[in-house]
Length: 267
Image (cartoon, rainbow, N blue to C red; front, side):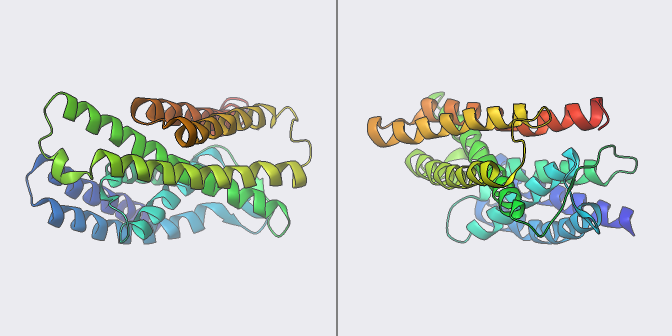
């Protein structure tokens, strides 16, 4: 049963990605292929929910091992994309989100996966955990948006727009959506850091110190980017670079620390 669930989840993500790739390559009508990709992602997200329930929820709390946390982030990114697609032109984000969600679901679902990190539920720490995971997901979407924006700019400068014109919104709309994501993610990251200070004991303990420091540095990076956008009109390559730097700091701080603790040190 578990194996079939895993195969179906990854299969639907792969099918959704294939539909979007066909729209990029011009092998199918762009609008039809994009809609098909979103439709196929719906059962993938539903099945992914069942996988997360099996892997992450325990009688003792939430198991947020490094692979479960990555799978949860990919699932949330997919859900956010599916919720936003009716109001914003974010279909193309599936080119990056769907393979990430599928691969993390597969990695977390394979037998013999090492690492377990239980987070007890039912306390004020829940606010910190929820806001942290949501912040990672939203800022992950912003990073995917920045990568697409970089690709779009590169293709346009090389006069090789091709299907990019039909697949992606205008540059100005892409940048506007990027900063909406960044502002939302920054707010969630702020809540995560504040609740961490309030509710998490020994935030700078050996196991948490690197994560805390790098998360704070990432917060400064995103704050500087948003202020630069507001006061100096930062855009284009500047926005892309700062977004990638900020999310890289978060990823290294959280997932890097977990890999060291769970996989290398076996804690």
